[in-house]
Length: 81
Picture (spheres, rainbow, N blue to C red):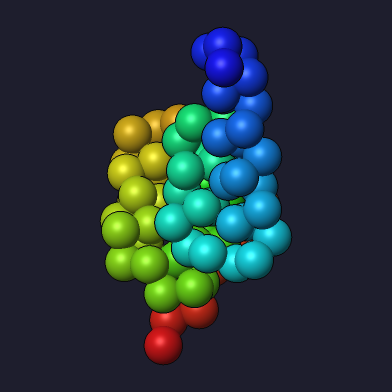
């Protein structure tokens, strides 16, 4: 298996996990495959909504680092349980 094929299989597997609502898969997709900060924050917020504390912190890092992600328009508020 070549590198491109392996990367595609990895992307497909992560997408399957995202569809099954595995919180870590949202993080992996955001980190590995998403190029726009707003989309990455949205994925991290979905992971945080599923209870992933790491993603709650990651959202804070995106916002604190000035990644040009408006707080009110592109980032859903995670459900705090």
